[in-house]
Image (cartoon, rainbow, N blue to C red; front, top):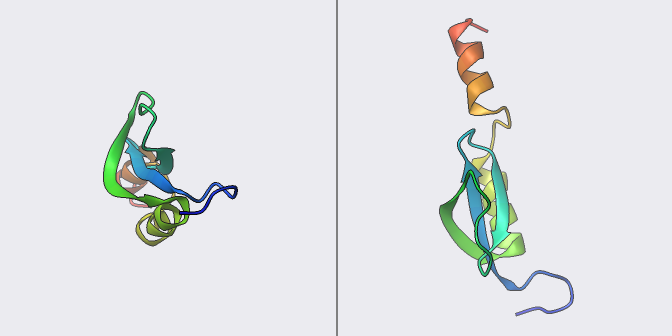
Length: 71
């Protein structure tokens, strides 16, 4: 465990209803509208996971509108 650089274990990946990702400390209550995605680890492990899974940063609502419009 590393101290001082903020990369200690104790983070989780969270996602909102628009399928946007972030990380949140495991010892803190999740903010309204965000849900645990299931991945936990160090700050960097969580960020690396987000980098692998969040390949389209457009919010879900925008992606749906664009698909409906044939864009």
